[in-house]
Image 1 (cartoon, rainbow, N blue to C red):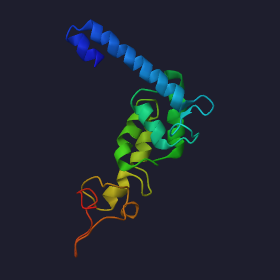
Image 2 (cartoon, rainbow, N blue to C red):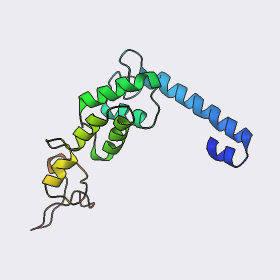
Image 3 (cartoon, helix red, strand yellow):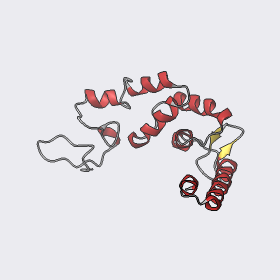
Image 4 (tube, rainbow, N blue to C red):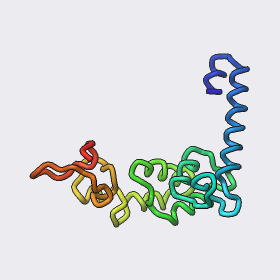
Length: 153
């Protein structure tokens, strides 16, 4: 919003939006980032650190520069524990923070949490889940294989 306001010549609005951004980011860091674990908590009142709570801040550039390598390496160590929908952001965070080789490995990995597995399983589109066993509510029609990416589940 600040960039839009600035482009429109509304400098007062641009400054206000910039201040709101600074305050929001400071609050986000204070409440969710743990200086002990160097990771983001799942929420207020917990010390649990999930893949999702860390991949989004990394992908969206919210992790302080001096902590990015730690968060990226922690995510690599956890592997593709993210959902298919979050995987794009997971991989972007890795690619943008020096973990290119690890990101490529995750895309082509053996096992059931990779696009390689989907292709080898016969899909022509990205499924809603890494494998049919992770999406048990898929509705099938007699004689047809389930379509995990077509909204049938």
